[in-house]
Image (cartoon, rainbow, N blue to C red; front, side, top):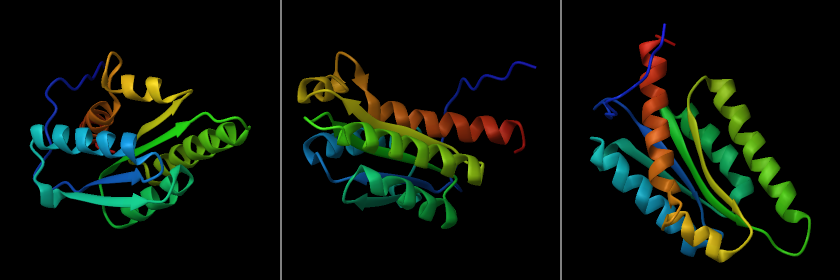
Length: 155
């Protein structure tokens, strides 16, 4: 069996969550705008999107968990962690990734990891519409594709 989802589409009964960190808002607000725009292009109505804003990246997994408990079929997790001069960057990145992965596995629902983990502002800019694409839009597509895939497998 080889299943590949070719036609991404948001079904009218889906509720999709979007969690966005406010830390590094100049980047994360663009990630969120791109994700919302792409979900609308794929057929979502604004009322199907449940958006939460959290203080920082570390808070993302708990908010994702809350949205899945609330009935969302999948969640787009968005944030920007930009390396500083201390080891704090490493701890935050690991914590957020591990938390999002654990919540996805706990609920058996997709959590798209749209959290940028970059060295500087320039790298972040390249990932919100620059030469490396738009990671908010890509994360939105990941959630839709994974929901469709899980439904195809009847999971």
